[in-house]
Image 1: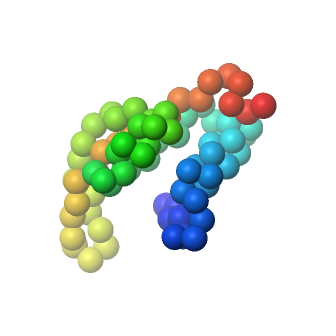
Image 2: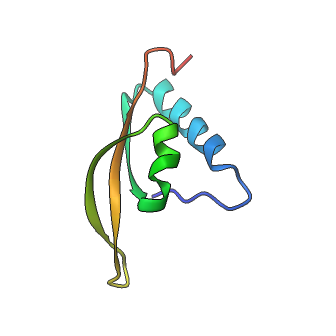
Length: 77
């Protein structure tokens, strides 16, 4: 699990992680997006796969959308 601090631009962090993954041969990334973050990830190229319930350590649950981003061949450049 990765959490981005409030003082670091989330979009920049995402691009850095995607570039690192692509350079290592990863073909796609999948994540659990909170409902309020779905549009953010759509704009970054992620596609909704399904909605499910996520269970947290303290027993609370929340709806999340599983999203996937497949890399183009030129992403690792």
